[in-house]
Length: 250
Image 1 (cartoon, rainbow, N blue to C red):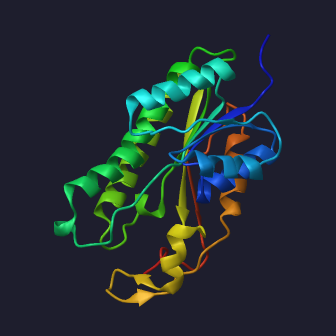
Image 2: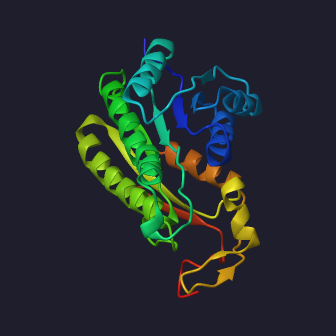
């Protein structure tokens, strides 16, 4: 008997964009798998979601063994996965390129890129064998996947690489009924954007206060992308705070 439950895995679900997307998907009748490093934060997210069969499973997405354990739990609990939202991400200190430590570089690449790859790889293995076959993967890119901020070499490099991951995933999943898209977000209001409201470094060396947008708009966008039929896909969507210094020259 084919399952009628819609299942979605959200990485970095304990706060910010991950939490907003979890709430939006739950409202749209998805059953959620919430993962992140801190169980307490994941439980707080689950408590904010519509009451359904949500699964909390703390994991370190930079660890292959941890990701494998996560997907084993999904397979055992639900038997399938319909949506993977590769959301988890971190940044490095905003310091000159030559001063960035190898450790900070590696943490950003391991989380933002390798973590997304490891989850995508396991999602492919499950989505190719489940009934019905297929599913959807959405990667959290960034405005930085197009245009960098000053002193952001690790984050910018990781997000450009995520774009490559998205494109390859689209191609490699095509004959398996696995679709992939990317949402590039600019200044969704969260703990990470507080500095932008106080003034953040611009390309010309000045500091300017930047506008932000309600993070719940990201949840609505993901619900739309996730709700498309398998025959349709949004490869790239950009959603940003109106007025932020991205389009144009300041």
